[in-house]
Image (spheres, rainbow, N blue to C red):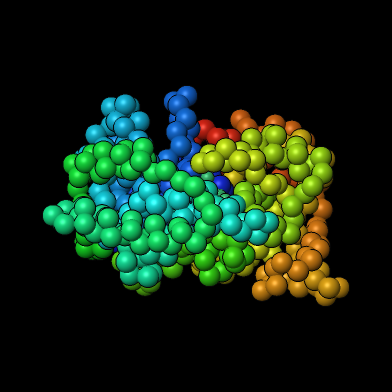
Amino acid sequence: MKLDVVLGLQWGDEGKGKVVDVLTPNYRVISRFQGGPNAGHSLKFNNLSYVLHTVPSGIFRDESINIIGNGVVIDPVILAEEIESIEKENIDVKKKLLISKKAHLIIPTHRIIDAASEASKGKTKIGSTLKGIGPTYTDKIGRIGLRVGDLLDIDFKEKYNNLKKHHQRLLKQYDFEYDITEYERRWFEAIEKLREFQFIESEHLINKYLNEDVAVLAEGAQGSMLDIDFGTYPYVTSSNTVCAGACTGLGVAPGRIGEVFGIFKAYCTRVGSGPFPTELHDETGELLAEIGREFGSTTGRKRRCGWLDLVALKYAVMINGVTKLIMMKTDVLNTMETIKAAIAYKIKGVETTEFPYEHEAEIEPVYKEFKGWNCDICNIQNYDDFPAELKEYIEFIEKETGIPIWIVSVGADRKATIFRQ
Ligand code: IMO
Ligand code: MG
């Protein structure tokens, strides 16, 4: 069996939670391979709404096994809170959730460094979610990080204190006041809770499952345009959000990757700073934000909105080797008279269809216009019943990217999901 991967192709918040939830009946195992509590994956079913940050989105399905892989960074406080809220739904999380010993721990001072570093950047701040993601990956690469497996060592407290002292020394360079007493108390309470969970060597287990023909799905966080290598650096997150990240974040060989499901919104959003060529600073942008309820599920910040960017989308399709596309929030465009999609960029008068290195330069999108469908599509159950204008939009995207759109989402609920043959 091969490992199928679900990932976001834009700047995050594409609807990964919903898609994983919809696909889980086909998979026994769901695994997260990178990122951490900067993610906010929303699920909606049986009139319930959930936002997951660290736990894989398969947790609510019967019989599913959910793995937090080695590539993920974990804040015990956030994870323990998440587990408690899921347990309230009578789900046996202890049985269904497995955590890699190699996943790194976000400690309270990582969060402070994140905040101090952002505050010191002024206008050039990244717009981080301030969950300590960047500093934790920095320590991982710097080979001084703490891992879940360290929680089992008798000298854990000493290791923790050494890292904390190192952080306190770093923090002296910033003029930043902080007090971690309360968060640290909760942190130590939370690791007691986590110690009741199964810590595993997830690479062995996942490869064993694949060898036994058990279906495994890898759930990406953030989006390709936030990837540390291929995103709009430095306005990115600190992990490889692209498909290759599933190999390093789970210990699965490249040749074992199967389907790569690339998720995108029918338009575009971005939260935080950084380039966004098709951003709209007008009424249409406001309308997209309002109809699409574009507020961050992790930080509550308002998301920037704009038209679909096919230059960036094609780039993401290439880097990830996407095999099937999934289009989300299509219904948000229901009332638009005209819909636009960028098919090229004009940079200093020169047109290009390749996503450029100089993305901070003035980019002028070259748009193709589409007639809107101007009707409610939320209750449509078959592709054939879609209005002609919507079919035209879908088929154009398929032609540009060379990849079929397999699923079209027309609403937040599990049921508002159209599969195409
Ligand atoms: P999901 O998984 C959208 C953005 C932040 C910031 C930048 C760096 O829900 O799609 P970080 O906290 O990672 O250091 O922030 O990345 N960002 C996200 N934007 N969705 C996310 O996750 C994000 N995770 C990080 O806003 O611009
Ligand atoms: Mg999100």
